[in-house]
Amino acid sequence: MLIHLIHALAYQAILRTLITPAEIAEYLAFREALADKWGEALSRVDEKALVGQYIRNLPDQEPSAAFEAYVDAVNQQTEDWDIARLIHLFPARRTTPIKGRKQGYIVLRELAKLYRTDMAEFKKRFAFSMEKALADEASLPNRLTASTGCGFVFIPLQRKQLPHRKKLLVTFTELNKYDQRLDKCIGLTVIAEGNGSWCDVQWLPVFSPWKENAPLQEALDTLKPFRPVKSHRIERYGLHDLP
Image 1 (tube, rainbow, N blue to C red):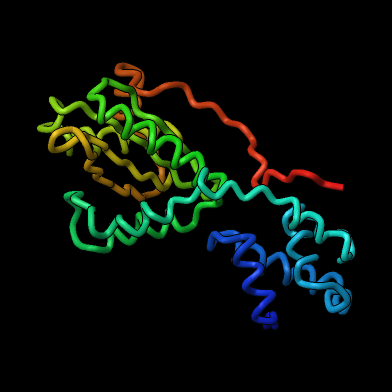
Image 2: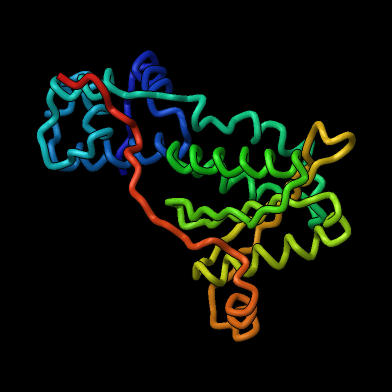
């Protein structure tokens, strides 16, 4: 077992650069792998260089001060992916009809696992769903399968669908989980409330091993409830101004 010894100021700098819990955990695992491979070479460079080496995923290269440039080149764009406010408000505003607090913690745990690229895509779909709900416009669900393997399905609803909200939440979540062959899927419905100036969000985590299900497959074939899924690779740190 490796014990990481990192100066407090260096650790603060790590937190300012990597920020998300998933990235910090991954960095420490990367750092351990570097120590196993390069040994004392780690002590000859600053922590910033190791963070830069992690950002560019270069475990097979000997640690070097030159890697510090990658940290300086990180394009944070925090406003694009930061979902901290959503996470902080979740416990107070959750109205989801699920049993006990445990399932709420399941949702929060999966959100906390997301990398910044996942968070950016999540935030984009969440904002789009709120926009459609506030306008009371009909819209097909949006979907996202995060790099963690957890799927999300965003379901904007019109006010007239309120009586069927719970059924729609369960149905779309289960259909997306099956369609994408996932073991974990979280659904959320978004609907305008009050005078249409704010939205209420209900969440449903459905976690179970994927298995063949003829009724679900028939429903997918018959209803065609989703847009086609597209996959693409996103640069996590958006490096710029490299020397």
